[in-house]
Image (cartoon, rainbow, N blue to C red; front, side, top):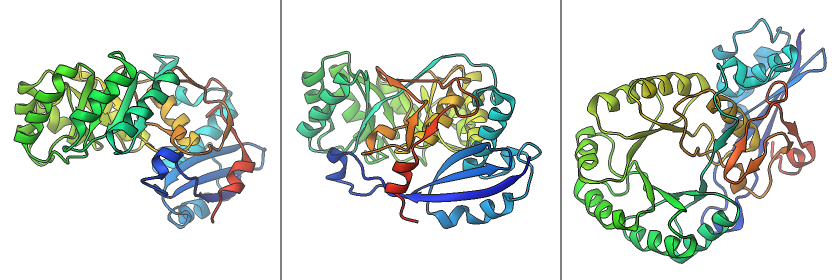
Length: 334
């Protein structure tokens, strides 16, 4: 088998209207399509412009995809090569990561920072769609009001992941807000509430609140440092599939649950790749941040089902998804 062509599709798919009011465009996304002389094709996805992947795409042409080390390439191409291998061997992609431990992967609904009543309205949408957790970009000046309004709109069973992207900044601010939010009973996690250069602050905050504390980390070395500092209850893992798997193993050794954000506001290709990986991680029990539903269209025609706040793990060979080329071409910009 030989790779005959690698095509890159740079897309701009707008966010859904509530998010588009604040962010008309979030970031560039490029799909890669690796085609072979035996009719198999693999897909991958990365954040960035088409030119960022062109050198890798050109270098793959003429090579045998089954003879390559998929993990020696940028992760979007790793995904595409594993997609081809899964189809060639008639196995789902998750088999390349290990034994599957779950058939469904939980996922959060998501909002950017909005006015409190707008966020509460979005929480009602998320609850109607069957989600039970809402990841929220938070700000110190209105997070308490926002969470209170969300609880009024949805009830106590709809929980909120508070992610200020370090905007709370300092320990006194984070501790004060944690104390104000704790009585609401709906905050499921504080993620990156403070500046991340002082893990001792996180350890102290963890002692001051019953709200679980989490850091968004990538490299396994960062996870190891946080575990040694005893400053996290949970961890949000990003990066390549191989990096996430290594970091998750470290967290599992310390009995720390994790969730995964390989793509965030991604499309269905990267979401499916992440779901395959998560289905093999024992401690990936928390709702993930793979959010193709935050855009007005997705490139998948089938294969990745979203039901009641869970992605069902595709069982077809490779990624197990179908690409809607009409959508790809409609939103293609390069």
